[in-house]
Length: 322
Image 1 (cartoon, helix red, strand yellow):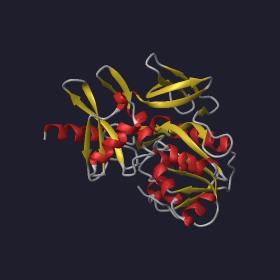
Image 2 (image 1 turned 60 degrees about the vertical axis):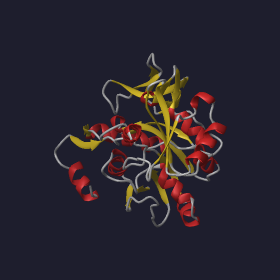
Image 3 (image 1 turned 90 degrees about the vertical axis):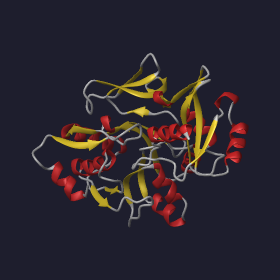
Image 4 (image 1 turned 135 degrees about the horizontal axis):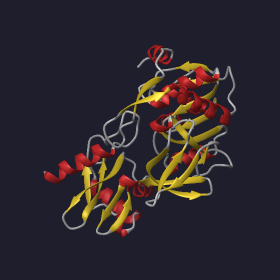
């Protein structure tokens, strides 16, 4: 979708806009979202960050998904000056920017070059969403001279409903919900969200969290828990431990196992599987070590840069049958 196409949709007589989920846990799903709720979400973000009319907002994300659409809505609703550039893996723009939203991959790529780092430093407020931020990237951003935030949200909440600071002395792994947003847990430990300005009713997520007062910390997704020989293993925690030690792209997934019920699979773009196994044996607790190692030319990812978990499971199941 082009910017002109979305603006035409935004200004038509319909009270709703068509959006699609990211597809990280399956096929992207269409959703109709009320424009008035998108405007409410835009005001909440701009008020929290202290943005004002005339501030320059960078659009460097695809308008096929909610994150890109919401940047346009923020500009339309709060009078921001939209700077639209091609949504590449390492976006380029001219001049200082007051507010930008990116996915982790874009930030990572920009930090790899002097020109990219200089561009990032020209952004007063940077929010990062659409995927997990690994410890290495978080460490790079901790000493960043500008305000950098990690967002928590989803298509159903019209982008984000909580932020956590990544830069400066207030950097934290705990998300703080916006005013008017209340969180709780299900009996399984999953996050429940009440955000009446952007979503009708209580939204029950698949994210397993830890609560601390009004704040929360994400441990992983309920559907990414592997039960192997009676041991429950959170896939994201395994990936977090491996990330500093594995340099090729990888994803941890699962497949059926006759003895253990389910077994972990390390899927990697590194063909040296014995070397990968040795790292896992050194870094991971005994019962968290993958039972299977699988080489792939390309680790499955969604268009928005998230791990494509269902596709990884499908590939692991196919390898099992070979």
